[in-house]
Image 1 (cartoon, rainbow, N blue to C red):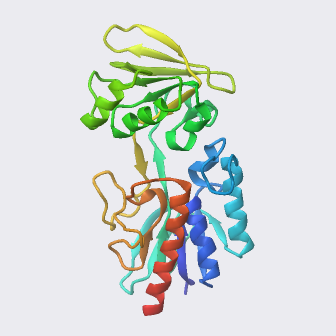
Image 2: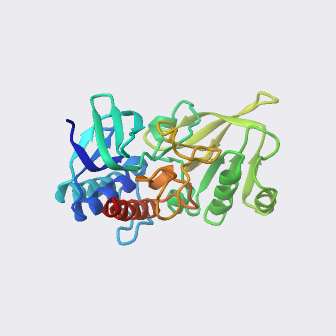
Amino acid sequence: MNQIYDMIIIGSGPAGLAAAVYGQRAKLDLIVIEKQMISGGQIINTTEVDNYPGLPGIGGFELGQKFREHAEKLGAPFVTDEVSEVRINEDGTKTVVGSKESYTAKTLVIASGAEHSQLGVPGEKELTGSGVSYCAICDGNFYRNKVTAVVGGGDVALDNALYLARLCQKVYLIHRRDSFRGAKILEDKVREMENVELVLDSTVEEIRGEGQLKSILVKNKKSGAETELAIDGLFVSVGIVPESKNFPFLATDERGYVLADETCETNVPGVYAAGDVRKKQLRQVITAVADGANAVESAVRYLTKQ
C-alpha cells in the first residue's frame, strides 16, 4: 500500500515554502512537489526584492533560496515531479499524479502559482529581470526619475501606468487598440497625468539591449510605421494566468483563480489554495507567505477533526 501523507504541497514558491515551514513545525508528515529544479517561483526572475520587510534589496533568487533552505533545515522533503492530475478519492484522501509516480495525502495545499502572460517578442526572455518586469509594485521603485513603458489596456496596465507616473520622469502606455478595456475612471486619471504618453494602435515588436534593456521597437498597426523608444524599464501588463488547470474540481472565478478566503479553504474539504493561484486583492511575496501559513493552520484543524 502506498504511503498516505498528512499533506502534499504542490509548488515551491513563497506560498509553498511557507507552507512547508509551518507544516514541519506542526509535525506533519508532508512532501513538497515542484516541477522545476529550483524553488522560489516567480521571484527568482526578479533582480531585487525591495518590499519584503527586513530584507530590502535582496535578490529574488537569493530570497527564494533562503525560503527553501529554511524549509530544508526543518526537514521538509522535496520531490521534483510535474503534476498532471489530482484525484479526490472516496475516502477523502487526495491522490496527486505526477510524471514519475503518484502520491496520496489526507490534505492538499495547492501553491502552483500563476504565470504572467508574455508578449512573445524577441528580447523579452533574455531581458526579463534586466529591465523587463511584470510587476510595477515590485520593481517600479528601481526606475525612479527614469523613463519606462507599460504594455496593456486593462485595469492592471492603467494602474501600473498611474503608479509609475508618480515615480518616473516619463511613462509610455502602449496598447494595441485605440480604446482601453479597463475602468473608465482609471483611464481618465491616466489621461490627466502630464508625464504619461499614450501610444495607441501599437504593438511592441522587439525588446532591445545587451544584458540590460535599452529600447523597444514599436509598430503602429494602422500606418505600419515603426518607432524605437529609448526606455529604462518595460512593464508587461497583458494578463496573468493562474496554474489551476489540473484542479477542475475546484471552484474558480471566470479567470481561473481558485476561490478561497483568508483561511485558504476551497470548496473541497482538505484542499487549500495559497499564493498567486488564489483569488485575492494583492499578489506579493508577503501575501503568498501569509497564505502558506494560513493553509497549514486550516489543514491542521481539518486533520484534528478527522
